[in-house]
View 1 (cartoon, rainbow, N blue to C red):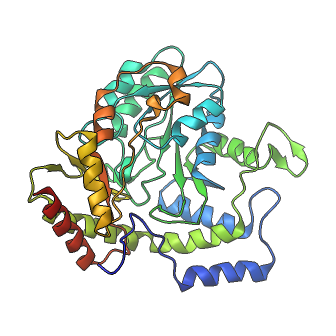
View 2: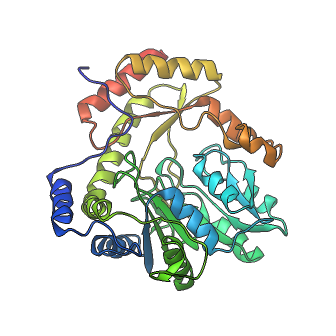
View 3: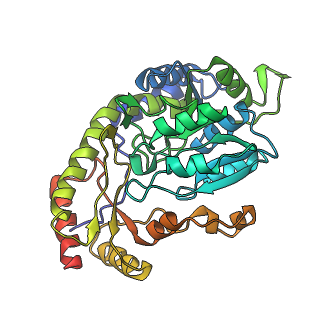
Length: 370
């Protein structure tokens, strides 16, 4: 190969550049309450895309998660159930509210949180559950929704990696009280940074809109403690264009994933990505697993792939419950999480990867695994 194939790459064209120039010429770069014209247009379009009644744009996916927890009245002394096999932001926001993160294990086939583990972890102190749609595959929300309803809990779905995915025929977020999205540069669609919160609950929306702008319902009149979580107008303009392209982006990711699987299914040494019936994965990452292998063998394969110009990557090699800061929240036995963290690795399938490059990735991986 003449170039390294990155694990992910933003797909930016002339349309996004033109949208940025239009905002700059308008002179409206932001808004005092975070609700400028480009932001409002992007919110309306995104809500329609995911079939939610409301959407609130913020500056990061982490901000969306934090605002959702605050809107759900999660506070000091409460417990929030979540997987450890995810990016640290999912747990970080729980700690920011003063609540305790309670880590539970994953399903070994999907790598998303186990509904049975969630039900088992619920106590009188539990206030909310944060399922994560990992690698673009939706979490199994129906049984989690049933548990939440039984115990009077809120579901805040971390959909940061699942733009364009569906669950039981509906966009992700349909079974949650709130869904939180990221538009970081590597995501299926991007605004550079940025996030979005979607919900059907008007009360949640009112709280989040206040929180993103220093607790203000109107300028210089704070009704609650807030933050500066504004999304800039330039980012919103990029997001509006990217959203229009998202269906094609996801279709290309799925086509690339299917083509790569045809190569990799020739070896019995790998477990390939699962897509259970009723789930549609958006393939933020194509994640395979080196069966019955030690971490050192997985790491060696990843390094060899990188030397061949393939941007192989590991998400997540360090489960949150084992990170130095988070150990203080308790000792957890999460065998499936810890096993997966030593065996999984991801390969590039983003829209910028050509069919020829997919074939190269497949052939190279097979050669290294022989």
